Length: 150
Figure 1 (cartoon, helix red, strand yellow):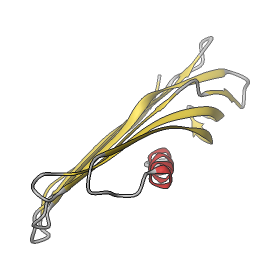
Figure 2 (cartoon, one colour; figure 1 turned 90 degrees about the vertical axis):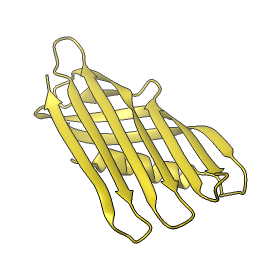
Figure 3 (spheres, one colour; figure 1 turned 30 degrees about the vertical axis):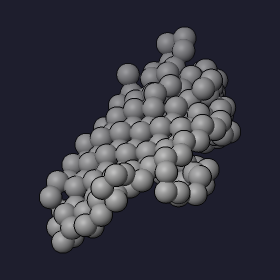
């Protein structure tokens, strides 16, 4: 499951991103989202709108910034046992490319599938960061991922 949801969100974000330009551009869009998760011992079907905010910006030093933020806007679901679930949380990614060739990227995913009427809640918590120098050396690499059911 690791990065499955994040991969879906990133793909949706890239597909809906505006073309790069010399100045900053921001796009806000609602996209229909559907997925089935195997979580907390159940199969949970989720469906509903996902709000995307996507920003691209040329930086003064010649570098560029790409950021996206996605969050559920009323996504609901039902498990294989009939329990009702509500999705909340956020997925955020910020990438900065510097003119001499290095880059950094920070990815944060906090996705909560909240069970009602005593059903368990499924949590995805991920923080990933990488910093690469102009020579291609990885200076920092962090990947902290956790899934829990409570």
